[in-house]
Image (cartoon, rainbow, N blue to C red; front, side):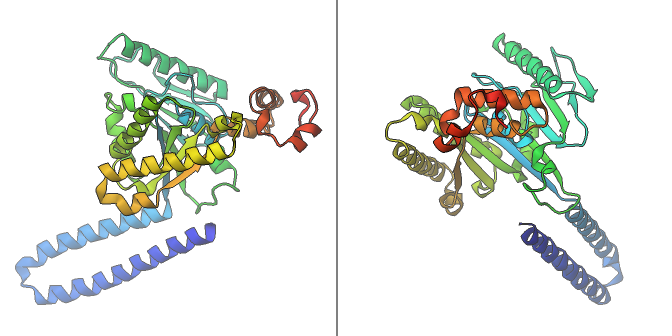
Length: 352
C-alpha cells in the first residue's frame, strides 16, 4: 500500500512543480503585455497563487488523515472506535451513549481534554498521564451528565466536546497503516443522529466533509419498523455529513448474531444482500446526483466487540488479556473454530 500512496504523493508534487513553472512563465509573459495600471492586480493574483501553492506543499509534506465514525442508533460505533484504538477508552452502553464529539488524536502519551462548553454540568479541563480506565470513567461521567440534562430538557446545556491524546493501534502498529512520514491521524467519533444538531456538534460535523467516514449499522435489529427507521437514519447521516458517498465505508456491525440461526451462513448472506440493496436504493432515491458513487458503495460485515476483545487478548497487561479471554469464552466462543477451541485450556485465563 505504501508504494501506491508514495507514488500518488510524488505525482501530485510533480504536478505542482509543473504548474508552478508554467505560472511563472505565464506571469512574466502577461506582465509584458499589460499596461502598468494592471500590475498591482496581477501581483495580487500572483501572491494568492504563491500562498495557495505553499499551503498545498505543506499539506503534502504533513498530510492529515481524518476518520469520522457515525452510525445508526446503538450500532456499536464507539466499540468500533475502541477497536481502532486497541482498548476501551470510549464509553459504551446498551442505550445510545454518544452525545458529543470525541476526537482521538495520536500521541505517545495519554491525556484528555474536555472543552468548556455553555452550561456544562461536568468538570472541564485537561488531565495528563491518565490510565485507560481514567479516560473511560471521565468521559462516561460527562456523557451521562449531558444525557440526563437532555432528558430533563435543560436546553441551556451544550453538547460536550472532548479530545483524547492516545497512542492508538491504528498508527502504533506499523502493519496496519503504512502511511507517509509525518502523517497526522485523528479519529472523530461523531454523536448519534439524535444529537447531531445540538449546540456545538453541528459546527464540528461540518468540518468532517472531507474526512473518510465509517457509517455503522446495527445488524442485530429485527423489528421491521425499526429496520426501516435505521435505514432512514443512514440516509440522514450521509446527507448530514455532506459530500459524496464514495468517501464512506458502511459497516454492518454485530453480524455475529446470525451465527445462532439454523440456516447460517445462508441467513447472513441473505441479510447482507438485502440490506446493501435497501441502503443503495434509499440513497439513490434521495441523492440522485451521486448514483454512480452509490452503485460502487463499499459495505463490509463486522463484529466490533469480539474484534476488540481479540486485540485485548494480545495485551502485555496480563489482567486485561485475561479479562478479554474470559469475555470471549463466555460470549463469543461460538466464533472460534472447533478445532482451535478443542485445543484451548478449559480456563480462559490460561489461554495464551
